Length: 399
Image (cartoon, rainbow, N blue to C red; front, side, top):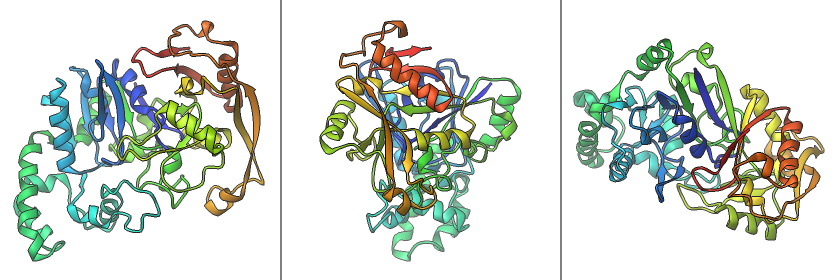
């Protein structure tokens, strides 16, 4: 079976936790887009481990892990991440594969990244790297295996002053990463034909999708479930299930419309309780109430029939909890200026005002908690397959 796990909001929904849970039964975990601008944070044996490029299935010794052609790779960041993971006992070995067609983030990409500061990027060079990819002037992983070709291309892209040190440094990166570079498209299709359990993960969230997000306040790739096909070289007919990860409220890093933004005092309380700071940059996230209007659109365009609800415990202290059910006036998603002007219409529910993170039986949750969960399922017309109620590894209730 092939499953895709996607974030349904503005990223930071807790996808890493869910991917890790589903990775236990997966033979293959593959990343299909984004770059080191993403971050999954996991608590493993009391250690906080942040993943930026490597699929978190690497923590299971028998799981194959793939970085697909749709990902843009900063070799230095990847090597540092692999080194750090080894310190925790997670070795890549012969079960880690990098697409030979994946594009490489170069130093000049980072220097160009969002110099205006308006979009709110992570300054990791991701956007400029994708620009070069689509401008047909990108450098791909396979070229690191053939220094003579890499040399000729790099000469056309950088000044003579920058050329030699950059060339030598990236050749060294190529030597280190060479054992992992492979035709991952062939491997993925082989494993799918062999009926392996395959889990596909994206970065960011659907509302940051370059085509379907709140453009221009978006990332440079497609977190969309369809991005899994182009980012790994597999057919849409291979995908059996798309599972959405929904945070029990909304959060967003950087600029862009977020109609359900909370009042400042409530927002700060939620940010503090939920530790809403970016895994990659440490920037504080903006916080808002759950937005059903946006979620319905995301579920529709991605074919999501099942969701996992995360960070429910962050709402423990709220006396009242709001859910946005419509906008007045209705907003055109393609024009952020209209979304800035719209007003959310809320349905208000009672909060449960008691800790829930130690509960492991859905029936034992407070009535108000269950009502909130069931209201979300009803409004979205979707099955909630699990809820996460705390940072502990076992703080997940499967429904």
